[in-house]
Length: 202
Length: 59
Image (cartoon, each protein chain N blue to C red):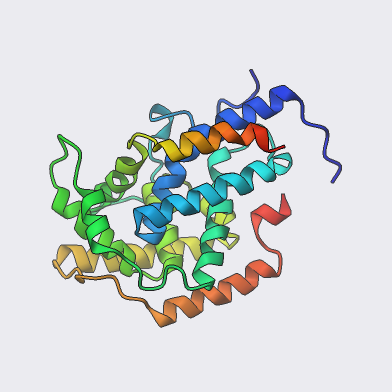
């Protein structure tokens, strides 16, 4: 694809939009990996990658969706290097989730985050995108490089699992590193390597 | 100003949830958004401000 030379204005627009999505990247990353410090490292990595790849961003499209793909790929790469395996830090999460003034049920948020972190990663990210990030199934499917039906199924299973855990008060005290989930995401990575993801197509 | 108004990243107001298939929402579904929004609303750490400020100098 012939990339037109970006003007200084284009760059300024890109920078502004990138700056605006940083809080959203932090929120997505924290939901994905459970530790605030690692999540922020991941976001910084994603920002540098996004900046380096800015010529591939189509002005007028969603910066949030575009950068989420980059963040997700960085996360998957780090997962593959075992960086996040079983690395949920209870103390950090409790601190992070201690609600700001005015928030009614801080305990429930902590339970929620723990429950979320017990989900297989691909279900967790699907639920984060749709249920927390407000993306449509279509957008979430584009971000994850999979079919809409796959996203729907993952969200459905994630919701069912959370229903069970949260309504029955059966939240594990610690998130567990799930070998099966890990395998699933590695298989998915092989799919990504085969070229069916948004970032590479763009 | 370019055509970037509909990117869905324009701050809290444009961030209203779309709820595909949300029939009877369980009590915790709001918590999921709160979890996300609580991070979105955190003040940005200086490390990010520094990083963003340095991006222009990188190329």
